[in-house]
Image (cartoon, rainbow, N blue to C red; front, side, top):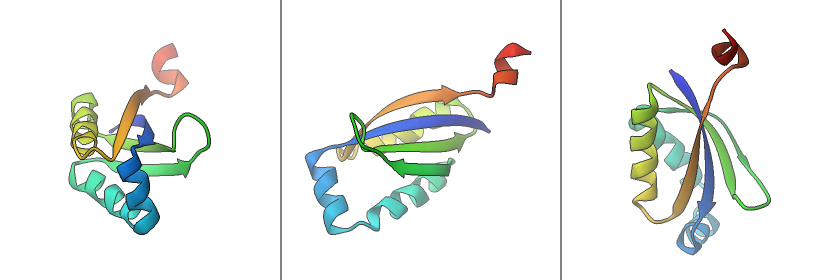
Length: 91
């Protein structure tokens, strides 16, 4: 499994959904698992992005499918980063 960082910005619709049904965040995490990924950590953050999630997925194509599915709903946009341990790039 590879590690990816998802930087999420909620749309006005996404903010409204989260305000009315905060448990929706946990439902999205389960959907990520249904799509073949796994949420390792997640934080709400202040600044340009609303959430940062660290996920695992089998490969970059699987991560792209997860982000595509989540983005298609219109409640958030994502910036996706591949995360690697230092020894992966130094060795």
